[in-house]
Length: 310
Image 1 (cartoon, rainbow, N blue to C red):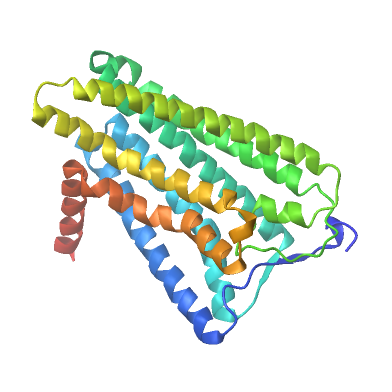
Image 2 (image 1 turned 135 degrees about the vertical axis):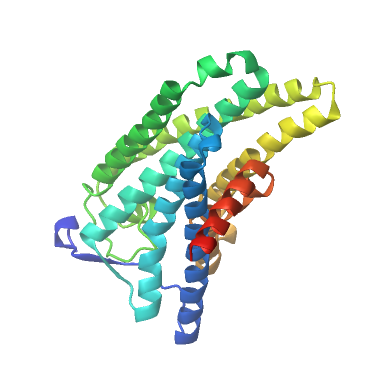
C-alpha cells in the first residue's frame, strides 16, 4: 500500500486465537464495561439529582465520570464486536474517530484530575478563599477549559496522524486505534511533526504532574499541622480517593507506554493496554465512593428511590 488514501480499513490486534478465548474476552469486556457504565452512571445521576452535592468537588467528579464513560465507550464496544464476530476490521474513518475520541477523553481526564487537585489544595490550604477561588463561574470556566483543550489536543493529533503516508501495511498491534501503532506503519517524513506534537503534549502533561505533586506536598504539610486527629482524618479522607485515581491513571499509562522492549511481548502489551485504557474507568467510581459518605448516601438514596418507584 503506497499511501493512506489506498487504505480502506485497518486490522486490529486479535485478542485471542481460539473461539473459546475470544468469547471469554467478550464476557470479560462486557463485565468491565457494565461495571463502568453502572458506577459512572450512578455518580452522574447522584450528583445531578442531589442538590447538596452541587459543590466544586462533586461538579468536577461528575465531569470525570463523563470522561470515564466516554473513554471506555470509545474502545471497548469495537473490541467486543470483533471478539464476538471473529473479525479484526475497523474502517479508516472508524479508526480516525476512535483515535480522536480516545485522545479527547483521556486528555480531558488528566486535565480534570489536575483541576480536582487544585480544588483539594484550595479547600485545605486556603479554606477562607475557597468560595472566591472556586465559585460556580470559576468552576464552569475551568471545566470548559479542560474540555476545550482536550478537544484541540485530540483534533491536532488526529489530523497530523492521518495526514501521514502509510506504506507498511494496515495491521495495528493494538486492540484499538492509537497514535504509536499508526506511526509504526508510516513511512512519511511528516511524522517528525507528530513527534513534535507528542513531545509538546508530554511537556504539558509533565507540567500537570509537577503541579499535582507540588500541590500534594503543600496539602500534606497543611494537614499535618491540623491539631485534632479527627480533622486530619477528614482532610485525608477527601484527598485519598483523588490521589488513588491519579496514581492509577499515571501508573497504568506509564507502564503501558514505557515498558522496556526487552520484556515486551504481544500478550504483555495487550494486558498493559487493557490495564490503562479499560480498568481505570471501571475502578474510579468505586475508589471515589468507598471513602465518601456523602456520595455513598446520595447513590443509596438514588437506588432505593428507583426501586420504590418500581
